[in-house]
Image (cartoon, rainbow, N blue to C red; front, side, top):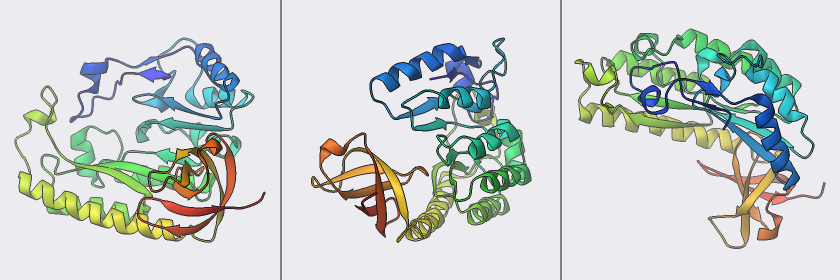
Length: 289
């Protein structure tokens, strides 16, 4: 954990009340922790925060999130760096450039959009429009070809019309996210959205969520199918859930790969050829380096 709390106060979110305002940990404390993990043989670290790319914004230690990433990449033994979760409003050009400059920074980002309608984004208090979100996606893909992008959606937010929802479906089709976490709006007591009167009916929220998830499944399946035949590298997490004779790990783009192997491969980074795919994972075979 490098940062806790959030200052954004989105209309639907209770985090500022439960976790408080943004607080960033001192950078050398973080680097020391990463160094200790590397000394234990850890190869991959994930930097965590409620709004991780706002790291350092209010602190006096004078280090931005991209600068912290540069510092963490200097730790010997660490081979992969990830971070989550990002707010699109705080995705700076310096952070985009870090993807191009830092080989250890995995080419994946979780970038919650929540809605494809600028009108609903304004009601949510997200601080960006559909257009600015798409501009940030374009910048990321320009910096790193093939970057994996995942996201979050909330459907049925108070005041969401059928047209607003269709705009959400269209942004899903345009960006073609690798995966998404999607939810029907559920009011949280104490939030602005809980006081909204223009509520979408529960039945309609359920219908819209099912439509969105069906589109996402088709896109995820197609994106994974395009990986078949390609060579990649996988950091083995441990035994596969699919078979005791297999192990599972993740590609740099954060795709899950299952392939034949023994549990003692955990922690190793291996070259793998993708030989099959499904909606949620890939199947591979080890290849000699």
